[in-house]
Length: 145
Image (cartoon, rainbow, N blue to C red; front, side, top):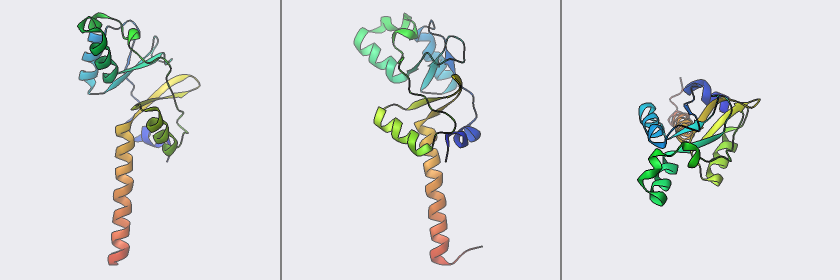
């Protein structure tokens, strides 16, 4: 399975914030869209970084509540790993596990076209396992249609 298959199901909507967005506003955006991370982009197309709930928590623990007034560029990850829609899901799973991150922007020719989260990966994996279980059960019991 490829990342494009995941995006076809979940859609290609990407929530972005500008580097100047305050961390406090970021939290409102994350809550509004019920997501765990947003792509940092000055123009909505180029990936300048990614900022997650974890980034906010770490910054709060290190620097205190004043971080809420700081721009997200002060806490965002700027060395972002991206993938293309043609990437194999298994490769992206490995990338996320080894890199210990939960969100991967999807880009085509340098332009942002989606985000895949660990939740998307897990949802897909559960679907595959359910299909496999159903197929095996039908094979064992002889209840094939």
